[in-house]
Image (cartoon, rainbow, N blue to C red; front, side):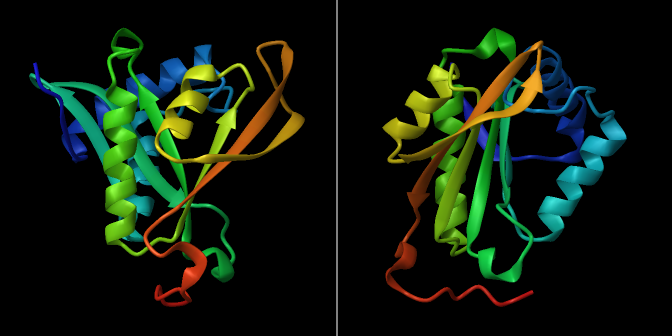
Length: 178
């Protein structure tokens, strides 16, 4: 069965909300404590899309198995060519290559929009799958912020990885200053 990675639609929001809720409640990819409702997830998605960022889903036979998006790394204008990636996979779809499909397509979509650098901010040094996934797609490890968050009754680190996109920093950015 093939996986279709496509732009997300409003019809995907229930699945996206459910996948994210599980990640919030049981994982460390998000440092939120309470899962946002569907309306908040719709607002967040719309804000990204309205600002030209890609927001994708992975689908198999009509079932959403995961989603990914790129968003601003930081809000200041000098960061306009840098994006942060986010990838969430449904628990039943872990270890099926869904994350790789999503991240590969996300990279392609960001290069098409002339973003120059993608940053992965990975919650927890124990997120070996996410760290390996990013490394396998050319991300380099650039640092660890130790004890940056406290969730699930323990201190968590954040692993920072980055990947140049297109010409990277070899040329000035072409994205206009907002």
